[in-house]
Image 1 (cartoon, rainbow, N blue to C red):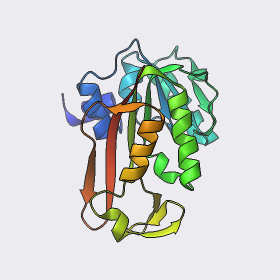
Image 2 (tube, rainbow, N blue to C red):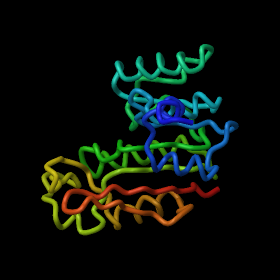
Image 3 (cartoon, rainbow, N blue to C red):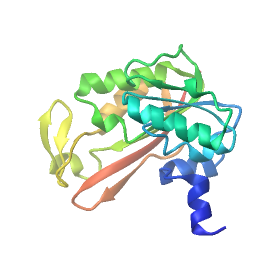
Image 4 (cartoon, rainbow, N blue to C red):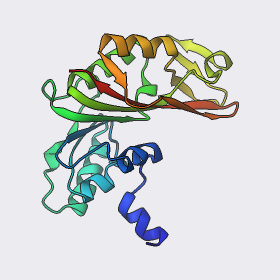
Length: 206
């Protein structure tokens, strides 16, 4: 398979999410939600392979693009699986999904309270035993001390961006509150003197 064919198969997927797919973490029988899906860049392979994928995003244009992309990949795809909604208030019942994906979304939380709202809503729609994939900026690797806090939990990073940082205390708090356990060791990828991006794969206990 050449590079263009590989790009067509996978799309612009988060490499750490692809790692979980390659590990067999997700199956076609699972209902999978991309919370903050944007235009659906992480869902190309899953849709093409017949997975039960859903998505929400607060940007109507992005949702329309995701619907168009999905229908291109699967002509009979149910476009109502993509909804315009904020992650903090999603139109799904409790425990609707066996997996929830949150890739580069929660670091746009506006405060610690807002982060709790976003995180709690994702766990609400995740059934007991389900998998939560979370990728966001963290304060690990010395990034919290190297950054300037400009609001409650929101920092200006050395790279100039403004992001909410997931810290060790905050991670422990939400995991205890929502009865989550790590499925594999969490990691933060450190871009030296710029930022740290964390990858967390968790299971909601039954």
